[in-house]
Amino acid sequence: MGFEESLGDPSDPTTPELELRALATSDDVGIRAEVAANPSTPLAVLESLVRAENDFVDDCISTSTWVRCIHGAVASNPSCSEDLLFELAGNSDESVRCGVAVNPNAPEKLLMQLLDDENEYVPCALISSNPNLSTNLMVFIASRPDRWLLKEEGGTVKSILALRQDCPVFLLELLGRNHDGDLSDWIRMNVAKNFNTPTELLDELSKDVDPEVQRAALYQPQEKARSKRISDAGNPSTPPDVLTELAEDPDGDVRMAVARNSSTPPELLTQLALDEDWSVRRHVAANPSTPPDVLTELAEDPDGAVRAAVAGNSSTPPEVLTQLAEDPDEDVREAVAKNSSTPPDALTQLAEDPAQWVKIGVARNSSTPPEVSAKLRDIL
Image (tube, rainbow, N blue to C red):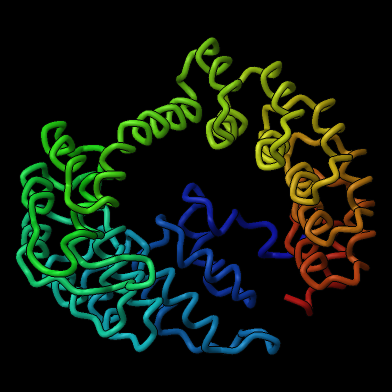
C-alpha cells in the first residue's frame, strides 16, 4: 500500500488534521480538490492550496480547470477566513466568486459587493443559497430596484429572494403586495410559492390579476404537503408504519425518499426494489440497509444506473461485485473499481480495463493489491 493510500479519506471531516495536511500535497489533483472542500481542513492548508504552484496537474486536463476547481472548493469551504474570502472574491472566474457568495462565513460587506457582480450567476447564488443571509441584507435587497438575473428562467433579484424559506413574513407581505413595474408579477408568483407565506396573503394572491400568480397560490398548499411527505419519507426518525404508508405514495419522489432512508425496514426495501420507477430502484440499490439477496437481484436490473448503484454499495456481496466487474456499462465497472468491498481479484482484472476512469478507480481503491496500485501510479 502506497503512502497516500494509508491515509484517510480526503473528503471525510473526521480524517485527522495531519493526514489532511499530507493529502494536500498529493500528486493527484482530485485528492487535493477534495481536501480543499473538506470543512475540517485547517486554514493554513486552504491558504497553501490557493497559492500553491500547479506543478502536479495531469497533462490530460488543463491547468486552469483544476485551478478553478480547487479555488472554488476553498471559496465555499466554511473554514475559509474572511481575508481569504476577500482575496477569492477578486478571482476572475465566476465559479470561484459563486463559491464565496454561498460561503456561510462571508461577511456582509463582501456579500453587498458581490450583489453587484458583473456575472449574473454570482448574485443569484448569493441570494438563493447563502445560508446566513441576514435580515438586514434581505431588506437591503428588497429595497433596491429589481433587475433580471436569469431571464430565461424568470429569475429577478427580488423573485429569487421571495423563494427563500427564511425570508421574514413582513418582507413576504411587502413583496407579495407589490404591483409596481414589469417584474412584479414574477415576485408575487414566487411569494405565492413560499411555504411561509401567511394564509391571508395566499388568499389574496389566489385572486391576483396575473393567472400565473393565481395558479401558484392555489397550488402551494398541495406542494407544501408534498414537500412534507418527502421530508418525512427521508427522515430516519419516521416510524415504520408511516414509512410503510409513504412507500405506497403515488409520487415517485416520495417513494425515492423512503428507498434511500437508512431506517427503512428490509421488507419495505424489498418491496420498493420492484418499483416501476428506475430512480426508486436505484436508491434501493444504493441503500446499505438493503438485504444482500435484494442487491443480488438488482444486479441484473436492465437499467445501468441501478446496477451502478449496486456496484457502489458496500453491502453488496463480493461475488456480485465480481460479476459486475464484467458489466458492459463503463459506469458500473467504475463503481465496482471504487468500492472498497470489491475482491482483490476483481480489482486486478479491472486494472486492465480499457476505460481510463475505471483504472483510476482501481488505483485509488485502498483494497487494491500493492503491486497493482504500483503499476497504475502513473495514471494519477
